[in-house]
Image (cartoon, rainbow, N blue to C red; front, side):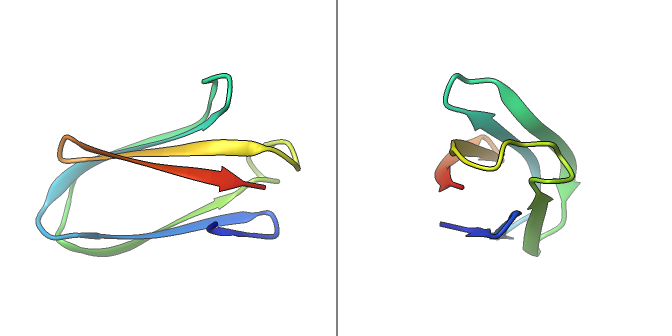
Length: 79
């Protein structure tokens, strides 16, 4: 689980330049955070989300959905 207190930190590596979209959803499917990046360069990245700043409830289970160059990756996040 990539949660540390109120912060969610996710590291990812792009083997080549890619378009990336990131959604954080609650279990009902409601999007709590969305970001889209057009053509990120090859290399390593860290996504840092502060749940308190984004007004996301203190406790719950969430789904982080990352789409990198058309490949979907889903991570369950428990907070």
